[in-house]
Image (tube, rainbow, N blue to C red; front, side):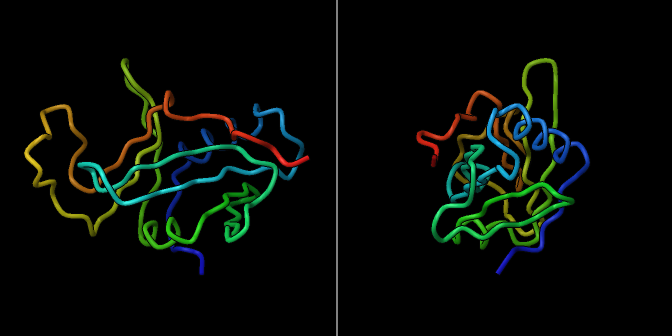
Length: 132
C-alpha cells in the first residue's frame, strides 16, 4: 500500500531534475529508501534507477515515478517531503508530524528540529548497477 505523503513543489523540482539529468531513459524514477535511525528519526538514501526493484511499489506524483521499498512506505505515512537550500547545504527534508524529540543528547544547535530528517546532496549516489 502506498503511503499518504505530501511532496512540496520545491522537492518535486529537485527530484525531477535529479531524474532528468541521470542519463537514464524515459521511465526511470527515483528510488527512495528510508530507515529508522539517527537523531532525526530517519536515515535516507536516493538513487535514480531504470525501474523498480522486486518488492518496490511505484508512487506516481504528477508523472514523476518514485520507487518505494516496503519498509520505506511504512515510515513515509503522513510525511511531507520538502527541499531546502542554504548557503552551506541543500537537500530533501522529511517532516513527520508524529515524530518525537531526540533524546540521545547528541543534538546541537545545528541539528534538525524534531521530526525533520535531512538528506544532503553529498549523500546521493548513483545506483551501483543498472538493469540493461
